[in-house]
Image (cartoon, rainbow, N blue to C red; front, top):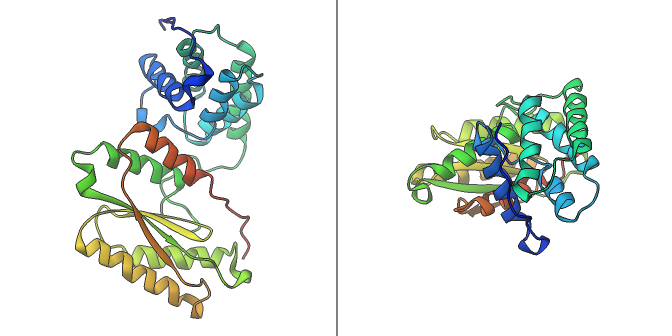
Length: 255
């Protein structure tokens, strides 16, 4: 692999330019799928380098996240090397060791990294939803084709919070009501995120889904709020949106 030098990126330039530069360098160095590059952990790793703090913990978290999303250990380590290349610093071999440790430890746990379907809901996993969102953003005339929506409900009955059976029921309703060929949904505690083409039929599907969710278990979910937002138009907006989606707290589930 050819290593290219680059000038140091000052902290004042901000995180997003550094992330973009790291991603581009990684792609140049052999990263295969650009849409899969941004995962939880890249921000922490970038911040540790920007702020000149020990990157060991951040590197281990990055390794675990790469493993969870199905990235091989060689590609994970090469990607971390690309970060140091992008900022013009020598490779931190301690960080390389930690990213490998994080990758191995995550692989030893019982995860479902690259599965498209969440077994609890029958809907998309977070990783698959993000991949589809990336693909949609890169499609031609994307602003005319796709809409990103949210169904938010407060879960009025606290006994249902974290319920596996509730997750299954919400997933079934979404699968039945969103009939569009390109529609995709993801459910996590108290919200359904969905991506649809902006047709009248798909918008009507969302309204019917909201109505059924509000009626589920005699209104146990509470009033459901339906929101729409445009598809991100830039890499920075896309990264920010995905970071927001990943920051949503997911409670431990019960029966």
